[in-house]
Length: 317
Image (cartoon, rainbow, N blue to C red; front, side):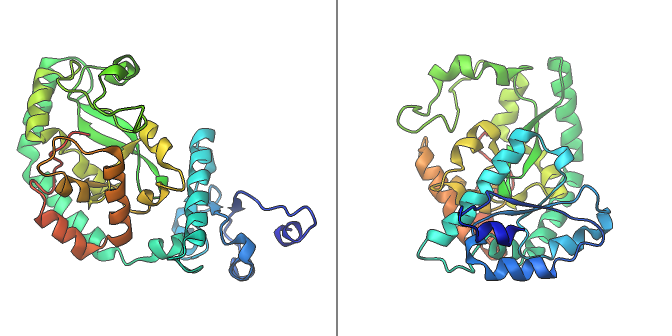
């Protein structure tokens, strides 16, 4: 049916192809068709696996032409639209950049050997969680004693491939601090006129608690991110996991590539900002894109070796 639509006089080209994958789905014919039809090279392919047993996911992941695997019942409409928009922009960007061949697509980034990096992440994050458990318990008690509310601050962040995940930190602010962002926009250190409202940071933020101020200065508030690393949401080294309100403004053709790399606790921009009080939005995202182009296990080791407090961000998110 897709072939008929593509070659019709209407010139129809879908924004996305969503495949409902079942136990008996045969990918061979579709894979051959997508590989030979250049019109579809820039169209994202999403596998919908709600009806598929989890033990069969491996078969779907091995299909190089599939860009994303989702359970649509777990996706909100807005999240799905963002995901489709991101995948489409990334695939079309690769097709139009002269430095990339037609074969250099999202699949190449997906198939990059990552088992060493992932094994290292699991080993280090689990070891650090075990070693730091007494400190974790003390911090949890201090937060509970000072103020009512949750011990952990959990927010939605966008990681590699614009995948949304729950991001963990120790709570350092008053409850519902996020709701005060708009009313404090005039205090933002980043110029929304020249740089756009991508990052938000306020000096001497009045929403920060006393315990929270200590946790931020010592970077202890970042320790729960080791749980994200252990779960596979993040890596020890990567790009900054962006809040959704920041990530949504970076899914343009100019910036989408920064989402090709994993999110990380520490990263390239932490090294490059040494000696600078602040770094512009453009500088930070340019470094994210540079990391997305070059990331790998040994490059990560170099970043960790050259980053003060390499496993814990010294800069507050």
